Length: 266
Image (cartoon, rainbow, N blue to C red; front, side, top):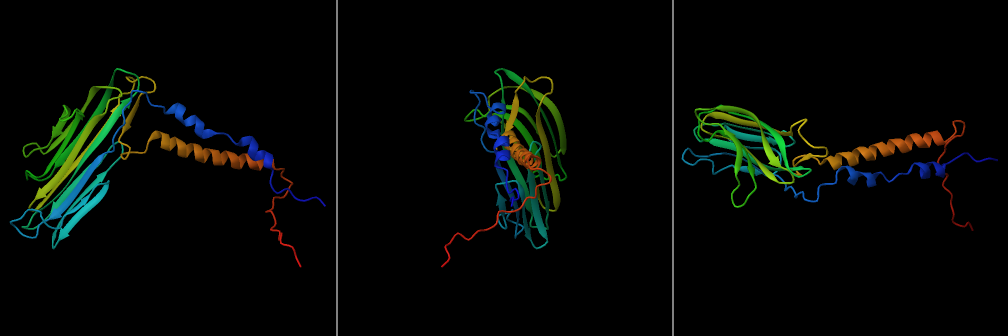
């Protein structure tokens, strides 16, 4: 009696392809590229217990993207920071006579990996505050990482006389060189107030060489190679599934291998 087909081993051998070996071809950085450090993230929120002291109590902090908040009685403060290619900061406070504050500072590091020479990088940022308090501010900078002090290449900030800004321009930067993108927004005082910041970095279309790639801090956004790896893995599984189905004739039933007791019987 013919046994039903359990598994066609030849089908899997035919479609097994070393897909991972192709990934370095597309994302092999230049030999002169530098390592881009992780972003530095600092979130703080607090409210005071007494009118004299400004925010020494009820303080919460964070060092990753997300939200931190603080509350005491009817007073509260909160700040939210998101990552990605277009990070955001939103801080606010609502207090009685005791006062409170919330804020975030983020330092992204970025680099354009590519052929030697300058490349145009576009930047845009908008910031705003809703309180006249000098402790409520939004600011944005792009700078070199030269130690001990970098050179500021672009900047924008709010003030009591300028509660909002919106900038959009470009910089000619060197490839394979790490730069800073410094972002901050904080809201503090007595009463209510808020501060927001929303910046974006990008390469200028039509003015970049083939293979040029804008790389942000690893903990800011997933690396392109990680996304390609995930896509290749899902594609390979789908391909194997289709190939296996096609390798088995439609009129041959597929069953699981029966469990056989190999122990000798007495």
